[in-house]
Length: 203
Image (cartoon, rainbow, N blue to C red; front, side):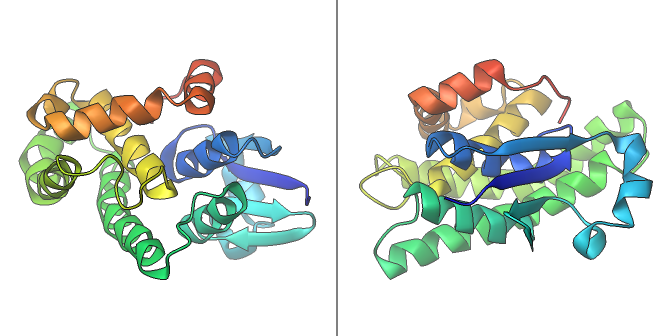
């Protein structure tokens, strides 16, 4: 098995889904976290000038979703059915659109009060609520997002909804099937262990 080193900042962000997949698959990896203040200097030597980066032995893989798909395949979390696998990819692309808007808000330099106002007035109604409604409707009829067993799509849903819950603790109460799904994934033994031991970060 290759040696894996996941390089990202010391927060959840785009790398948390990758960490969850590694943990679920019981795949050894090094979780290398770069302090924000050290990034300008390290950026010069980082492939593509962006994080996360996954080192597979001495080969660098960039782009968070490409990394997640690659690791998910190693962990057995990609459906064998090509159409189901494509549905996981489609979910990832949809969720990524929301995360992009969220990161723009978090790194905007606005005050916390202004960020929360924009979350409530723009990010939630325009991006999050439609996604959460669709997921809630789907999960009312299925045990897992797409397959008859857990996939990386289920883990992705839960990492993002965990961030939603941290931002607004009660918002998931309006989506009971989605909330139940989040709890189910968080209670998977390997995921539960990771949540308990991972570093505490703001995002």
